[in-house]
Image 1 (cartoon, rainbow, N blue to C red):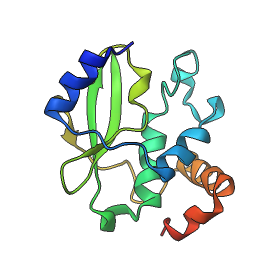
Image 2 (image 1 turned 30 degrees about the vertical axis):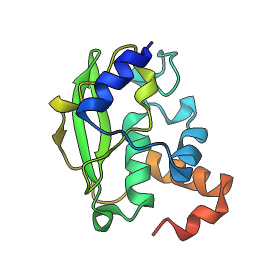
Image 3 (image 1 turned 60 degrees about the vertical axis):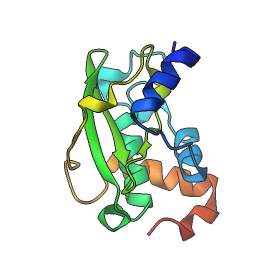
Length: 140
């Protein structure tokens, strides 16, 4: 698990945005059925959910017009996704899945596989809106 020192070291290099209401609704809606088969054996909270959580947040925030940019990197043996805000802050809804600090400095901007939400992201968006209907005003 990350220690307080690890979090501080990571935060010195990159500012990680606190999880906002939208992020909390997305995280609360993550379930094992949204995982790709290769990640279903993982047991840490949020493990394997980074792509779909990041994709849902991006689209619910307005997609390309939001100014958010998807970022991808490798960490602890797999791919990890997060978002960069226009001000440089990062949105990482699933960082807690890792035991070591995420090397955000190795991340690169990378578009999602499609310009519209995937089937998994559409389901996650549906669940997040059902959990907090007031988010419909945020989602465009």
